[in-house]
Image 1 (tube, rainbow over the protein chains, first blue to last red):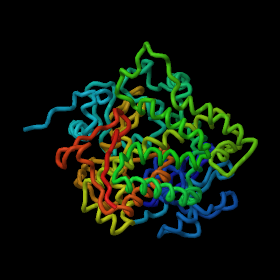
Image 2: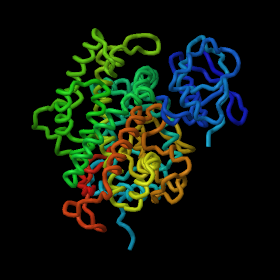
Image 3: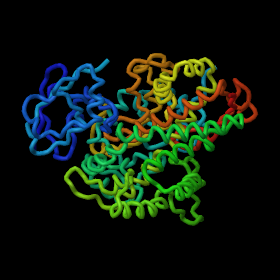
Image 4: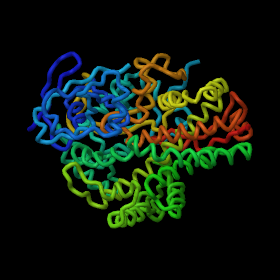
Length: 106
Length: 428
């Protein structure tokens, strides 16, 4: 099974297997990492599933939509590698993707 | 004098719990954040942390019974440490009532992928003008009359029109849908007498609307337009497969229906609070940016969904508590939203609570209400027009009695928290 490697806010790493077709947000929360709040449930209306994508894999990621960009703009922790994990649908090509949960906005 | 013990009451049928379900939840919470319901074969989850844990653990807790609840015995006897096979058979029995809200696992993830693209910020921005124009017009007519009954005269037609307009339901059919929804018992009906065995089987609103939605969606596949029905007709699952048309028919009918009661009741729950609190009313008139945070506090204290249901798919746990497969859970969102371990002075209405957005008014986890962004916008829009166009909003004492001794009637539903009617006096 393909997997993503997730680094939590405290620096712990966890490999989470995923079924292609689910979102990165679903994989992370179903993997038991509950610090990713994902309050809106994946409808692109909050920014509480914010992650930083580690180097690599950027070519395989879907582009950032205007809506996602607008929501990320409201985060004080945005970086060039910021994404909303609910907007990344996982495929086999993303096996081994490494992400870090973004710090929480106040 | 101690309060009457409510813990033995049947949450699913006892109409005396409608006026203040929160007192029942408080008493049940005192027995433990997860405790057996006196009269139903279900655990009641009243603790915030416990409710979040259950709602987020969609692997072990199935949504198969999300809307049917736990007032009636299960149609099967759970056997063994994993009831997945029995749940498959249960899903078959649900037939046309097997909706997105009931799905688990990959079938849910696939359909949710489509539903989650419907109410994006861009799509909602495009609704701003017509939503505000219609809200302004409805409120203007009410203010000219000096008052209104907000539930049926304003809130319901408003949310119906908004969702119909976004979906692209033709104007001529909207009233037909409204009539069928109005004539049917509310979701989570507590009046079991309504389901008399000798009466003719009635077509449910979802089945009735399904006939229309089948036509719309078939047409949109051939003749695309700029509406949500077209988006639904042409949507594909993440793997590129085109969904069966019937799946999209069920989804559209569900979106139309689900957006009605809950949003309309939220408008009236918020308005009751505004009408009964002149200080809050002035505060909001002086600063309209307080409307959204006020609405979040209404969602916490009096959201329109009181509870949702789960069934343990396999032997599992909540915290350290063992939960055998087949256990039903009544997840009381309204109780979790008043859990004193989570909320300081939970009964107090306070705008601007820290981390208020974490309330469970729209649920949590993969089944979090996909229409929440729309609900927030439309409720805020109509409240704003009421505040803008009036100098005073109050309850009609002839209909509801004097302040301090109000008479309010709530819909007989174990799911929905909503007034049957709310008569307002409006001063320009």
